[in-house]
Image (cartoon, rainbow, N blue to C red):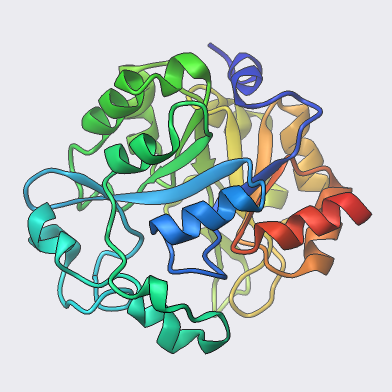
Length: 289
């Protein structure tokens, strides 16, 4: 299956994907039922979340390798069993960090498994799932593919799997070539040279990417996920790169954009989806732009 065929499984070409980054995580604690519920209330097209593996081999929706930022626990998530993680409070931190959006209902929010999320929202919702830190969570690909297959997401065309790791993506492609995959890319600015370097050396800088680079990604992935700028404000992609990617048959999604001016600019460039913590604000741009 080539990139063009896989793209057809993602969405109608005329559609634009509003991707709720860890749910509506600007308004509620990330990757919890509260954030996912809000995302759907705001008509997000995809519920996006990262997957980590517990000490007993369960797959949970969680971003960080360490649990201290978004729970009342400490240490590596992979050192905890699912039962132990379920005892943690994954919501109160949000009320402290974002008092303007605080809600007592967030206190005691649970970490969710992938199966629980799919059971909550059903096989007809769209899911956008990242294999996080596959070098740590070794072997997570096979159970993840099994979960989305058994839940009917592959048959329904309601799942995208994403990763920064080409190895993880290729593994999932081998397990089931019918699942559309997104190659995430992150370019860093070299402090000495000022040049852009992809942190896992997947590609050269966007301006230096050739047909061969796109063809390599297209051998397993249906889309590209990229960021607009680096931490220091350096913009790493432009309209020409977006169009070059589209011309090679890819969907092009940009993460994580919370500024409406940038949202509008990216829409004008032709990107086919945007990750955001504020799905309602992206909808405003799409409706008024």
